[in-house]
Image (cartoon, rainbow, N blue to C red; front, side, top):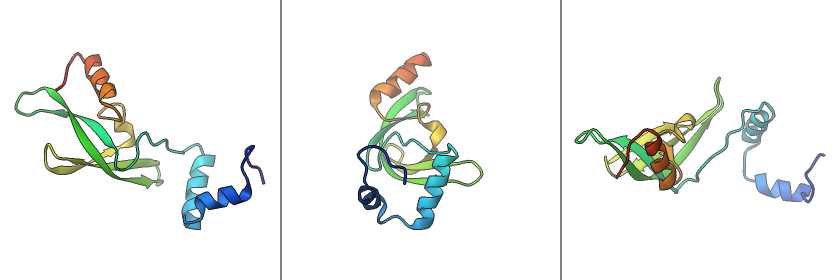
Length: 122
């Protein structure tokens, strides 16, 4: 078995012990086919959304909580995340391609994106 330096078979098994075999195969296949997904934040984290303020027409930075993520490995591997947005009282769905455009891990990243658009947000 090919393991990285310092890894033991038991350490690897401990990591995946509770994951169903078919799910592990799906993840491993995605990794081997270079379809692996990099998750920029964890469930429960605060993320920052760029949202148009309908009253002012400006873009606001809205802190929201990441509720859950769903991985899909159909024809196009994507993950979607569900965000609790108290500002509008709703749960919103975003996709992998939205990170760095509409969803940010830090407020600073969101502010930088707005500045790149020639805007400032509250």
